Image (cartoon, rainbow, N blue to C red; front, side):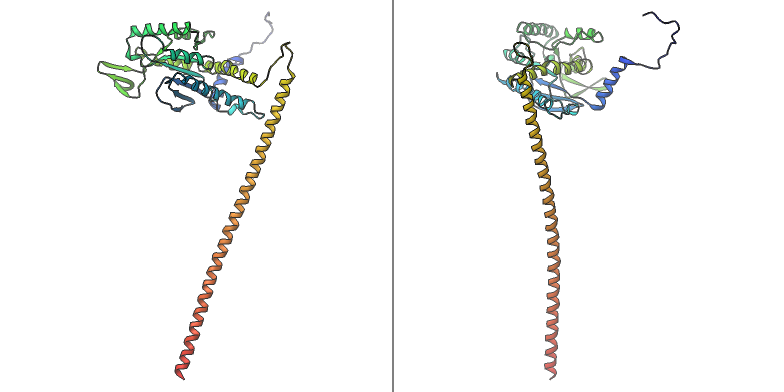
Amino acid sequence: IAADKNARPLALSGHVGFDSLPDQLVNKSTSQGFCFNILCIGKLETQTQLLQKVQTFTDAPEENTIYQHIVDYIDTQFESYLQEELKIKRSLHNYHDSRIHACLYFIAPSGHSLKSLDLVTMKKLDSKVNIIPVIAKADTISKSELHKFKIKIMSELVSNGVQIYQFPIDDETVAKINTAMNGHLPFAVVGSTEEVSIGNKMVKARQYPWGVVQVENENHCDFVKLREMLICVNMEDLREQTHTRHYELYRRCKLEEMGFRDTDPECKPVRNMIIKLQDALIELKKCERSTFKFEQLKRMHAEEKSKLEEKRRSLEEEMSVFSKRKAATELLQAQAFNTSTNNKKDKDRKK
């Protein structure tokens, strides 16, 4: 469009339009908070931790059927979200989302190949969660062996059709770093809860007779790379992939099992789906009304119980006062009787 020569130029005092969207999203996420859940598979204990909105769950694949327990756990989180989504009065804005956004699958540093259990488990999980393979205890093998082991793992995953999470490269702002990081998969990490003095500061590290392996030293392991990719660069994409891909697949399969369909074989809207949905809504309303009535009865019962307790305390107080008055009266009567008896005895002695 040709510029109008008579148009008055207007100087902008700040960002307008889409430029301000990232700040808006950051402010909204900061004020409302959000959940980012990481599932760690491959350790020997089970625990749950909450660290600044990051929830971690760990499990151990000790048997050939353990993957079913993991699948059930992931499906349970999807089901909880689906039930909240199907409510008439939903509160998704403040719902505690427990769906798994990233799965760190820890691989033993054998240096040879993946175990069949690892391949079967990851194959069962790749349609339900974003899998990021991680080599544990990477300090137990040499760098040359580690490099070969990484290539072997990626080759076996591809040949067995296991779909792991790939860092997205369609966004030009992160395409370069994500392309580089995809080449580092699987990440090789070292963990430690102990601190060692290096120079003039204390760092997380593992102490050996031949030296020290620092957890956050990128020359020693990929821990920093893994943390940056999860938390700083791709957290929102992991959450989006969980919702739009994995959860949507679960939701679609679940609704189809319940008999819901968008169209019939002739691609016409299915009336039965609408009827079933209406019936489901009616049942939900009935349940809500029943719950409301139960809560009312519960409150009435509590109020009646409170009133009876108050009356009981009042009656006990009245009985206590009556008992004290009765005892005082009996004491006075006894004293008066004794006084009368003593006076009569005195008169008799005088006579």
